[in-house]
Length: 136
Image (cartoon, rainbow, N blue to C red; front, side, top):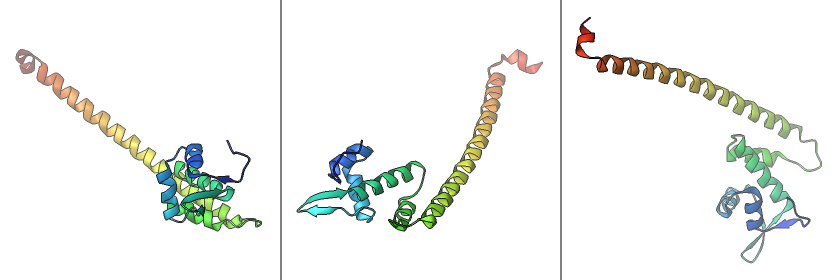
């Protein structure tokens, strides 16, 4: 839930987005977030909160932090941001293709496992038969 104020502490954002404060500090190190400071205290703006939301969403759909950062940096308030949206659609399409390939690979692996298991079970059945049955 978004609170009424436009500033947030690191612990508030960590709790809201179910990430650790260490994760948020890592995003700062990568310059994905740039909070203001009051001494040692970090003060996150509504823009920082929005960026964190986009980073978390990007990770959930499989984007790298670099890709998320590029998309975030393309945003220009007050403009149409068509380039950013087109790039986002491209990134989503690439991720969709990657996942579809992984799904095909998993299907192939499951088929291979089924065949290997069937072969092992057949061999076990043969090995467990009494010696008299094996000769006939």
